[in-house]
Length: 412
Image (cartoon, rainbow, N blue to C red):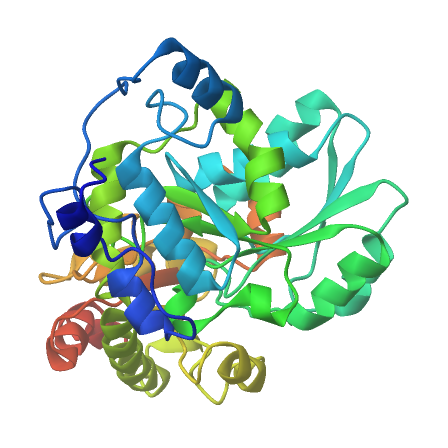
């Protein structure tokens, strides 16, 4: 980067202290190039030219400057800086997907003989990763109730190194007490990682509540328009740089510059989207709660939710943008048929497995996100055949409820 006086005048990377998350979401990034671009640059380059062999040797040894695309990139670095600022973290590392962020977490922290305590209500692939894939390498995992602190405490062993929670969970929207879990973890000499995908830093900042690490599937709300895959870990610099940095460089779960640039732009509207989508979801959840064809609604913003008060404290008074509901039916076969009818009768909602999009997405968790689990695992997680998950986008609320009514109306 040029160091001439004009470039120095244009550079605005150093921001004043105390800026709010909404401002950090727009302004945090590396300094612009000598051209003074106002929108962060997209650096599509696998390698970076070094001025001389001595500098090249130093940069490859220290891994602080840009050398090779698998280890560092200016666009990816800008995303990491922005997300870290929004989460109140010292540093962040971006990965190719949310699941690769959890893989990086395990590879960086765990070894054969170590033990993990994880909520049994987390995303289905997370259960498989901890319960099956890590087990191949001698790491054991105990799955416990998301909300029962006594179960978490009882599952701790002398070899416990990590507690992992997702809050709210997918798709039941169970909420865990982050501060209480942090206390349990730290008393055992373990770390607490919180999957903050559903809330994002716009609603919830787990590090401020005592968590050690925050994990994101940036594919969801951080991008916000269903365009790219991305993941991230946020936390103390000694963990992000010293522990996860070498593992990432070796294993290569690297986020592409283009995907980083898309998520970087998505973060600029995150707070506005999360507020609007949370308000719309609350309206849809209240409508569902009154519908005669609906047996139960799962949404933290409702007063009927078991952890409503906790959710409101942790999530900035908002419930998020995902609501799930059980269709009223007798028996699992009838419940599945009813859920499929509700989904198939929609004409506006997208039938897909993603969430966090501006377009509302409807899905059947038992056969999609949790389809690879056994029926016993699904039952333990509380996911029945009659459950439908709705990730509310930015359409008009009345159009969303009208679309749901097409399938729910005949079932009433």
